[in-house]
Image (cartoon, rainbow over all chains, first blue to last red; front, side, top):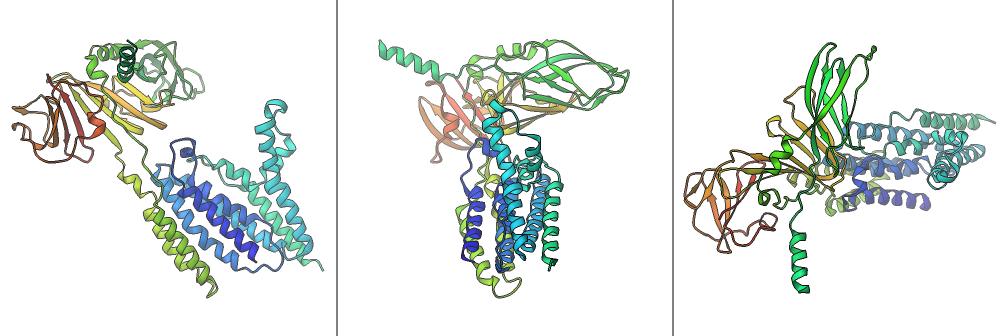
Length: 196
Length: 327
């Protein structure tokens, strides 16, 4: 419980930090405050859950995230960015966070489900996009683009979709593929829970 | 000798060298159908022309093009979504240099005045808001155990605070600065419009010179294909300066009276001494010196020693600043 509460506090601090750091006139002016502020919450919501964790933190997280999300929207408006793409991004991140949190909670109800979700999280949610971007940013000059299979696996991650919303005013569309992954993980959790 | 050379170098460095204007004009012969064409000479800086020409329409247009430090050279790329029969045509007929000639004919002293500073609005939220949000978060944690929706009340209050206080500083920043530069004459004057990232210029106030800071900033320009449309300039992370000649100018400023505008505040420099003169109505004599604020630093800096200087601010939501150097 203490570890999870600490994680939530770190999440709040990271989210607030990107909004309250003094604004410079460089590249960061191009970035969307909504995407930056909601990233820690998206990562927190997708994390694998351990068995028996109280639902209190899950109920508390929206109350902690909402004011920072509203502040990020206010900053989008103040910086002259289009509000519609920012609102769409916020709504999509909310949908992803809710779906993945439900899937994590459902998978945590069985031992096998917990293992499946943990493997899926490390391989698909965090691992694949990280591997693709590491390979392409550091290795692309020598080895070219990442393999098609790895790039395809990275597309499943909500973090890959999030990267498309990072530039202010950029509409990344709806994260259908990531939502499908979340729904699949939830269905897996339900099936494993029903096993005798 | 070394000191004299250093002084000369400093003086040469302080005087702003006239930069190449970022805006040029290209003459095109267009034959429809053409819809929403774009014009590009420098990579990243593009002109979008709203509107369309119907099939069979044949017009000649002088179109604005964003250029770089090399100025107008070569042929800009004009592109549009082709129709099914690919029957639209565009022929480049050369660069129009009348504006450059008019600009060069203006006195160098007027053209080389320091630019007004413009900055991005500071949208960093106040630190007090961080403390308030932290307090609301702690209150949410404390109330979360008391009921299913216990955490919602502090969160709702924090949302309202965030919306109203977040980015409030942006409204304090001047969206645009307008400075009118005079040289003790009724004409010519130069109008300088300076804006951060965005400038909107009316069709009857098109600039003879456009500068950006940084100099190589990509500028997106939007106007209409039909003549008479306003120019909307946008450059991310850059200041934009548009200058045009006012002939005739707004008027003449002398101690006996001025016919430029009703000034809300005036600063006068005579024989090297600055004095604040308060409001000065059109047609009235120059008011006497009185106690008041010092002249704005950005307006008085970089002026030559010696001549009489009048700095003034007119009324209005976007005030016009006057900087006139007399004999």
